[in-house]
Image (cartoon, rainbow over all chains, first blue to last red):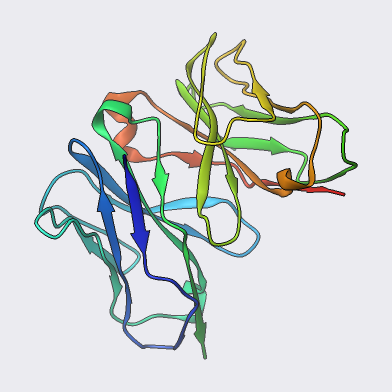
Amino acid sequence: GNSVTQMEGPVTLSEEAFLTINCTYTATGYPSLFWYVQYPGEGLQLLLKATKADDKGSNKGFEATYRKETTSFHLEKGSVQVSDSAVYFCALSVSSNDYKLSFGAGTTVTVRA
Amino acid sequence: NAGVTQTPKFQVLKTGQSMTLQCAQDMNHEYMSWYRQDPGMGLRLIHYSVGAGITDQGEVPNGYNVSRSTTEDFPLRLLSAAPSQTSVYFCASSYSNSKSKAGYTFGSGTRLTVV
C-alpha cells in the first residue's frame, strides 16, 4: 500500500535557524508528493508539490526535492520566522487514484523569537 | 470567497446522537473527500466522491455515511455518535485527475467532541 513517514516532532527552533523535516514514502506507481501546512486553528493549505522525480517544489522560502532513488521528499527552509510555526504534513497521491491523499503523521514546528 | 465551507465549526454530541457535518464548495471540483485528524495519526480518509451520485469508502468509513446529490455539497453523517469519533473533521475538494496536481483545497474543519 501507500504510506508516508515523516520525522516526529515537536521541533523547536530559534528565528533564522535552518529547518529540515524528513519525509519518506512507499507507493505503488509514480506518486505525486505534497507538503501541506496547517497554521493554528486553520485548515490545511498546500505549501508545495512535485509531480515527478527530481522536481523541486518551492514556496514561501520552503523547498523540497522529489528523490526517487531514496523515496524521499524532505522539506527545508534556510531561515525560519516565528510566522512559520505550524504543523507540516507530507502527503502523496498515486496517479491512478489522485483523489486519495495519504498523509504522514505531521510535524509540529515552533519558532521562537 | 471561493473555497470549501464547513459547518459547524464546533459541535458537542452525546453518545448515540446523530448529526450531519456540512461541506460545500463553489469551485466546480469533481472530487470531494472527508478526512479525520487525530493526534499523531495525520489525516485519514473516511469517504470520498468522484462526482455527483458516486461515493466510496476510504480507510476509516465505519460509523459514517455520505451522499453526493450535487457537485457542490458532500455532507457527512454520523449515525450513532461514539467517543471514538471525537476528532477534527476536514472536507477537501479537487479537480479531476488531469488537474489534481494542484492539490486539494481544504475547509477550515469541524471540531467534534462526543461525550
